[in-house]
Image (cartoon, rainbow over the protein chains, first blue to last red):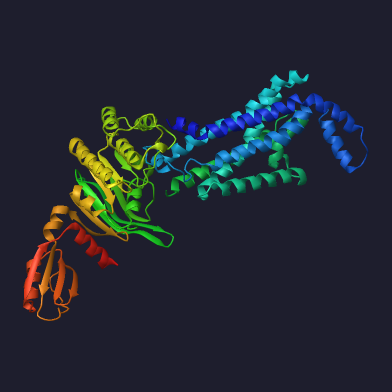
Amino acid sequence: MLWYKAWIDTRWRFLVALALLVCTVLGNALAYSSVDGFVVALAAGPAGPLADKISSIAQLSSTFRGFIWGQVIRQNLCGLWIIFAVLLGADGLLSRRKGVIFTLALPVSRRRLFSVRAATDLAELFLLALIPMLLIPLAAPAAGQTYGVADALVHGISIFLGGAVFYGLARLLATAFDDRWRPIVITLAVAIVVELCKEFIPMPAPLNLGGVMDGQRYFLTGTPAWAGLVIWYAISMSLLYAALRSTEMRDF
Amino acid sequence: MAQSNIVETVDLEKHYKNVVALDGLSLAVPAGSIYGLLGQNGAGKTTAIKILMGLVRPTAGGAAIFGLPADQPAASVAIRQRTGFVSDERDLYDFMTVAKLIAFTASFYPGWRADLAARYVRSFDLPESRVVKALSRGARTKLALLLAFCRGAKLLILDEATSGLDPVASEEVLQVLVGHVANEGVTVFFSSHNIAEVEQIADHVAIIDRGRNVLSGALDDLREAYRRIEFVFDGEAPALKFHSTGVVRMERKGRVLSVLASSGSEQIVAEGRAHGSLSAQARPVTLKEIFLDIASRER
C-alpha cells in the first residue's frame, strides 16, 4: 500500500511530464524534414563569428543523429527532465503537507517510507528519460530517417544516471527547508551553473556533469562515459542517503 | 520501568532552540486506565504525545510504551503497531475516499478488526464513497477514531480528540470512546484542555504546566484529598503561615482566608482556629477548581 500511495502522490506530475517530454521529442523529430532544408541555406550564409557558430549548429543538424543530439537531447530533453526531477525531489515524502503525521504514525520505519518514495520517484524519472528517447527510433521513419535503438537507450540511461544528482540534491534540500520553493530554486540555480560550466569551463570529462548527462562522449566517440555516469550516480545516491538520515533525525 | 504502567515518561525534556516545551515531565499511565492529560494550550501535551509516537525526539529523559523506548526507531515501529493514535489535527489523506483510507490503514495491521470497522462505519454514518476532504470536522474525527479503534490496539493515544467539535458531536465522540473502552478493554491516554471532558471520562489525570507534571493521580483520590477551607476572621484576614505541608494556595479577601489543601485538611482547620478564626469550613473541590488554582499558582 505504500507503493500505491507513492504512485498516487506522484502520478499527475509524472504523467504531465511524460506527455510534455514525448510531445517535445516527437515534435522535434518529426519536424526534421523542414529543418533539413533550412540547414542547407544556413550553411551557405555569410562569414563571421556568429555565422561560424550558426554554421557549426547547422553542420551538427545535417544528420538526423546529430540533430537529435544537438537539438532534442541537449537543448530540450535534458533541461525539461531536470525540471521534473527537481519538482519530484523537492516534494519529499515528509514535506509538511496534510497527511504527514498520519503517515509517520503508521507502523513503518521512516527508512522504509523514504525508500519507497525515493524508489518510486527514481523509477518514474527513469521512464521519463527512456520513453521519449525510445520513441525516436519509432518516429524516425515518419520523417524519412532512421535512429538506432542503442543510441536511444544509451542517451536515455545517461540522462537518468547523470541527472539523478539533481533529484538527490532537491530531496536533501527538502529535508532542510519547510517550504517547497527554496529546494526548487536552489537546485535549478545549481543546474544553470552546471550548464554554464559545460559551455565555458574546460574540465575533465567525467566531472563535466552536463556533458555526462547529454551523452557527449557517446555521440562523438561511440563509447558511453561510464566513469562519469558511475561518479555522478554515486553522488546522487550519497545525497539521497544524507536526505534519509536527515529525515530519520527530524522532528515533526 | 514498571510493567503495570503502559506508558511511562521519566524526566522528559524537549527544547526547541530557546523554547522549553517539556521540562522534566514524568508520567505513569496504569494499564486499563483512562488517563487524561490536562493542560493549557502550549503546556506541552502535544509534544509529549509526539515523543511517545516517535514523531519528535526528546532532548533528555526517557519515554516508553509497553516497556519499549519510544525514541528508538525499531521499538517505535513496534509501539505504533500496538497503538491507536488520533492527532490533534485529524491528519488524514484528504484525497482518499473513506473506504480507500480504511482499506489502506487496515493493510498495516494484521490484527485489523474488519467487523468493528463495518460496525463503526454504520454507527458513525460515514459515507464510504466520499473523499476525506469533503467530510465535516465531526465526521473526520469519527473516521480518525474508527482508524484508531479498529487496528486491534491495546492503547489509544488521543490528542485533543474533541477540539473544534460542537457540544453534541463532542458528547457523541466521548460516548463512543467510553463504549469502546468498555467493550474492548483498552488503555486510553488522551490530552485535553477541557476540564469537564477529562472529569467526565478519565479515572486518572495529570495536570501539566510549562512542560512539567504539577499534579497527577487517580481522579477519585484527588477529589478525596483536595479540600477548600474557608476561614472567617473578626477583622481583616491575617497572612498566616501554616505548618501543614498540604497547603497548595492561600487567598485573602477581606475577612475571609481561603485555603486550597491537597492533604491534612483537619490539621489546617485546627491551625486556622488556633490563629483566631471565627469559623472554618472545609468542602470538596472540583477538578476545575484544582486546575485553575494550580494554573494561577504556576503563573
